[in-house]
Length: 489
Ligand code: ADP
Ligand code: MG
Ligand code: ZN
Image 1: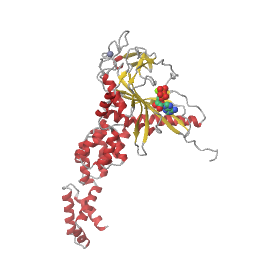
Image 2 (image 1 turned 120 degrees about the horizontal axis):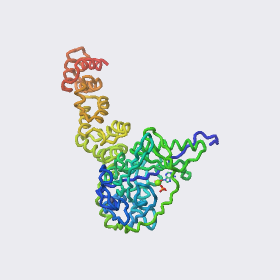
Image 3 (image 1 turned 90 degrees about the vertical axis):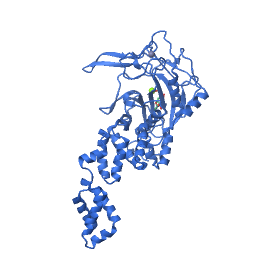
Image 4 (image 1 turned 135 degrees about the horizontal axis):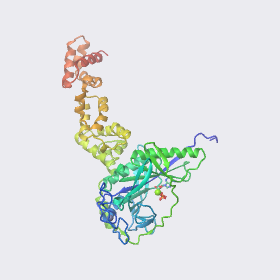
């Protein structure tokens, strides 16, 4: 190869840190409620306000949910697992330390060295899970602003001490798209095992993304950490922007700075937060107020036995039971709500492959374009089934179905209603009438050849058959014209 390089090809390297609010009723180390949306500072006590002398007690349910995750991700679960203090000062952290877990060999986090398989339309890829650990959330700062200036800040400690789980991947992801797919699969898994609601827009699942570039095969490059994405699509967009920004720097021979950057959803850019994150010394040390978590083999076995069908198994089952392509099976199991939607639709309309095609095709395209999840749309399984039946019955063409689907997703309108209101039934649908005519001609070769032989009554008979087939809904003039054209062609 010549030295005169064209654009240098870089490999994108991504590792994710995912924070998950666990579905517990009470906080990590006290009895306070975790319910979202209560008036500020009404769900607090001396423990989560960090008052001197208050002692934490570990929430068993939170440990169990962490354990479910660790087991489902195939992690090595450690018999004893220790909490640590991560010391730093910030107004939303009343104790001036966060109780968390750290990656010490002698005091390991709950689970380490797991993996999750990623099946995109490409070949399967195993994404390493570095660790699963438990910690507590901080309080929430509310900045009161005027003309873009912060006047003062308020603190709501309702979130202080809410159980959090952190899942950290190895830097095994190789594109922004893979990062989105991975996060979708992880979210689907967490929903399936009852650990998280998975609602990114409510902050119950938050993803920080580390990204760097390197020449293929070279050492890992310097990474930036991107925060503040609140949907799967933003994660992909933010990473794509960040990879491109780094590429431009490297192409100009400039270094990438190791820093934390924030994603601006509206402008579609990442920006450097003013306070540049320095290498901090958190002075981690074992939490002296808590005994280590002891997880015996029996508990692990119980958890393993209680896990429901996981998304990967579901994907394989769909692929074989419904004869779906790996891509379609992966898509309809990409989130729990979508999988449930798929099965419910198949309950109303048994041609699973057609259902999967629509979900993986037009429905997925709509969701992508709007940045929505299926459960955020107004479409119901019943209505989708109805739409597909209308196509089968020849009442509307596939094209018409594709045209009204977005409205069904947006408003929850029923297909039949839309077709009736807009006169979309075959009256105005040449393609659908045409396909019925084709069938009638095929079914009645006699009259068709009679017509060729000059018997015009044969045409009247065929028109009658088309009208019968369409239960009178076809426009007779259109039927006449199309029949003549088809018979003469
Ligand atoms: P820290 O705890 O300081 O954030 P870690 O080394 O634990 O750093 O890594 C955090 C995350 O960053 C992990 O998901 C890891 O896979 C990812 N990561 C580490 N180095 C890189 C890199 N050079 N490029 C992309 N991601 C990286
Ligand atoms: Mg980090
Ligand atoms: Zn409390």
